Image (cartoon, rainbow, N blue to C red; front, side, top):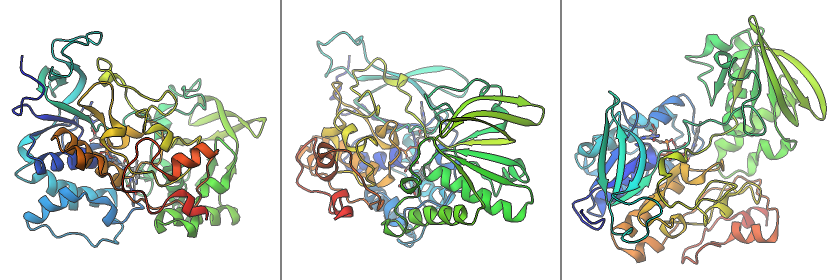
Length: 449
Ligand SMILES: Cc1cc2nc3c(=O)[nH]c(=O)nc-3n(C[C@H](O)[C@H](O)[C@H](O)COP(=O)(O)OP(=O)(O)OC[C@H]3O[C@@H](n4cnc5c(N)ncnc54)[C@H](O)[C@@H]3O)c2cc1C
């Protein structure tokens, strides 16, 4: 059996989203061989499904440093740093050229869905020889044929987009939700584009309180101006509209703040009904309509609607690493040291202390969850966070422990930072998990000072 330290073995990266591709760029920079498994037929399959959305982070936050170096070698024209791209533009102007780079392209496998990861020749209970055993990646190609590939380390950058949360406040589908699936969209449909006919002139309920929900609500309000009869109900699970609408002008990301301000205006003008706290109890599809029964502010209400958009976030698929010794926080489903820094019960900072290989490590050496999946169920992930994660992790895998520890990250604040306790404040405002030399210069404490 080959050893995990065998330099001929590749570093497996699961997912060719922005973070998986950045990880591959850092691997190349470190002289490691990446092998990227992507279940879709092309890169950035998740991002393409929200291609119509304008992101709220400008280009300077969306491009990884190692990826930029590779691209500039190829004569790439860097986008204007302050420009705000759509998802489609990120794919076209950044990720596609990156994936075509001759150092990356030969290492990409499409229609390659990873099913499971294990240690070659060892079950989960066996400790002896574990760190030396290569990883075993079980993956399926487009024809359904299974393959096995060995790797010296694994980065799971497979995101959470494919596992949307259902409508039920308890995390389960409500009765009738499955039957009504043809009238429910999970995520953020292209309301003003491809999905227009589905919403024009209809009564639409949007469930959720994040930026995806606000985006959907605002698109529906735009559609309302052009298509008579379109009406919008915004259902929030919790009270606290102020927090949902965000920091507005105080938000360091102008576009993110603008979303909240536009939603606030629509409420004040009476164009948008907001129901909170809202808990759907059941759905009954009847003919063309949907009868929705919910508890609204403690009372039972019945609403007749046509369509539902469920934008209540997503959750990680934990089944991939069932055979590995992964340690996840039971609440957030993020790596143990990272979870307290991002747990929305503790604080609402848009920023997170810098973290890297040390905070992302598991009892299984050489295995890391990175990118949006590393945040588990927490909703505040930004690409930039993932880029610093993979820079640090690749440095660690390459044996440059000093560079792996030297994590640096400065994220924009939401302007509505709050913490639940002194402990949370400490976690929010300083790198609680691991002393690191470089601190965030814009922390949540700064936001409130
Ligand atoms: C609507 C929306 C707007 C956002 N706006 C911003 C923003 O303005 N700024 C910002 O910084 N962040 C933003 N984010 C958050 C985040 O940066 C993005 O979700 C980003 O795409 C996460 O990158 P990722 O590489 O971690 O995961 P993803 O982009 O989700 O990529 C994961 C990849 O893994 C593949 N995959 C999944 N399972 C498997 C498997 N089993 N085997 C092989 N491949 C697999 C998927 O097909 C996908 O291509 C936004 C997110 C959403 C949903």
